[in-house]
Amino acid sequence: MKNRTATAKRSEMLLDQALGALPPQAAKLIGRDDELATVRAQVLAKDVRLLTVIGPGGVGKTRLAVAVAESLRGNPGFSDIRFADLAPLPEPTLVAAAIARAVGAPHAGDGSVLEATRNHLGARRILLVLDNFEHLLEAATDVGGLLATCSGLVVLATSREPLHLRWERTLPLRPLALPDPKHLPPLERLAAVPAVALFMERARAADPNFMLAAHNAEAVARRFRPRSSGVSICSMPVNRRCFGTRRFSWAAGHSKPRNRWRIRLERYAG
Image (cartoon, rainbow, N blue to C red; front, side):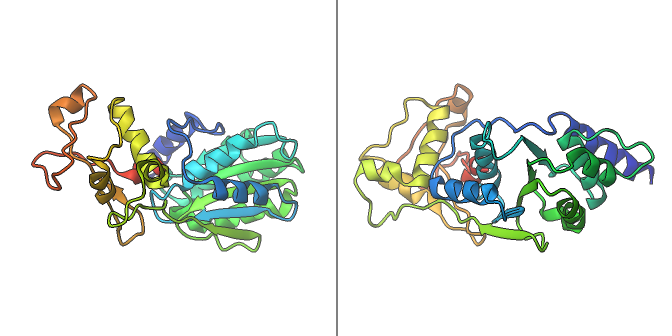
């Protein structure tokens, strides 16, 4: 029992560090213009109360949800926008308290956390982003209770599975488009392929001089390969010594270098 309580307190400390504020994003959203417009329009619609972005881990759910929330800052459709990353929570019973802290509800004391949150929200038009809900699905009923009593609350959730609430609309998020190594387009069009554009951004973050060129285009395209989850991995050879000085050693013709690190796109897609 003591261990469980200690775990819960550590989780609450992690959440309190930045609860409520949108997390800063190191990279811009790439290749998701259509999805951004769709989600934005959905959460602004008067008849939408809960939209869940669904997809495998690393497909970019968090990055899309944050981009949508960022795009709505100052929009008259919402009086406030709040964010809660639920990933650190070990059990569903902690979700209600996490939501309360995210929206700034006063401490409930001996009363119900959900009741305090309901009273705090009232009928205000608020967008609440609940990120990484998949391991806490039993707490979906708490979200449903808030939606039932807080007429202005709109929830944008990300999860690997639906929340199965009557208000819910879902948006399946698919992996970024990949290049076909057997039919490469011209360099300008290849660089515009979303997965390649994301890869180039990450590569240039490590080596500002890295360029997509005729001699390495095929090698870049071949670094992408599908996984059973549908998420792509892009790996490139990296000289470990050079990496320490933020320089990549690009071996375009070698598919299996002896020493290499992998840049995994899902880490940067969200």
